Length: 335
Image 1 (cartoon, rainbow, N blue to C red):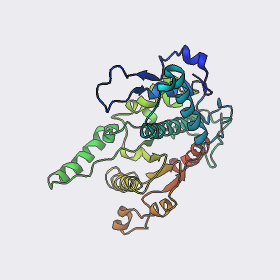
Image 2: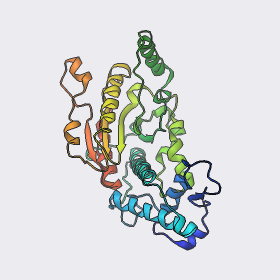
Image 3: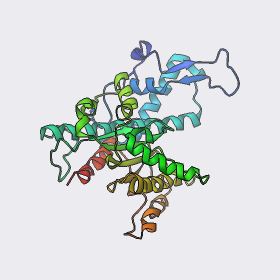
């Protein structure tokens, strides 16, 4: 395909098409008539550029423009391949757009971190779209990776043996009282890269220019490069990414924030840890009030009260969200 649907490219799809006909025969009434291949569709629509990147002809475009074109491409591809019989379930389409929104944001933040890491090495800022954060100083020991974690992933696997042992002892003590407080799995995490292991982590200096099959694998599997190596103090921030936040969904990030704030401060000893929520839409408006909730850990410690969610960011475009996240990186510089 391409960002603008092209039937000739669709006919000769190098990815073996983003849709599969499963109508003949249907296994049961619950089975979708057309199987949607998310990774293929992502690679097809964005095979020329990462939204918001230097290769993007209009890098300041908002998410809804990219998502609208993505949806249009899928419908056009379906009608081209299967005619008027093609249809997608509206619920499946909504879930799909949530996933694509997260994928676009993860890629934008990956490139922001790669730009930062190259600056830490060279002292020269190389980006036509991202601005150098105020106060940023080039130091090779202050590189950061922003990685996406799989759904349901056991985030404790990222940590080194000593840190995992601390988490394990804490969980074991709770289990003995028939309780648990497992480390939750946020959508994105920021990790400081150890100077001693950076030579083996050059992938975090790679700026991706498209959603090629190779880059999709890179985004989805990068966390494996860090497994078993992260200390508690290198766990810098977590981001919950939501395209929309309805009343019944807005409390999940609050729960994650409170759990992670407690674990980060008491078990991981990461005093710099922050928790952010990025939403593509701030509707309903009451969501802002909901995210002013204080961190339970800060209240119980009797110290200066802090919010559980350090920032609620309305993520309108990949570029603006990448810049906002990048501007925070100097906060994590070693003193």
